[in-house]
Length: 66
Image 1: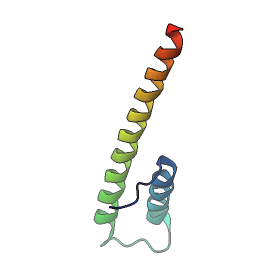
Image 2 (image 1 turned 60 degrees about the horizontal axis):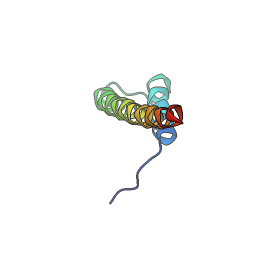
Image 3 (image 1 turned 90 degrees about the horizontal axis):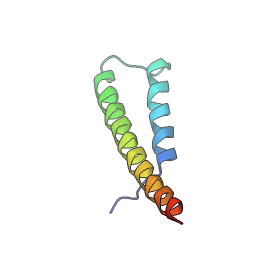
């Protein structure tokens, strides 16, 4: 089972992907694959953030009841 990465780790990985597009190692041939990977990672981060937001809202509601 692969290790689950934290949101911060995923964001760091996404930043590294974006940096690749501006770096000296940029390759037009590799760009479509790298772009697809970055989009997938961004969607995964967005999903994680939505889940986290929902958890926070549940906790906030619990505190509001008291």
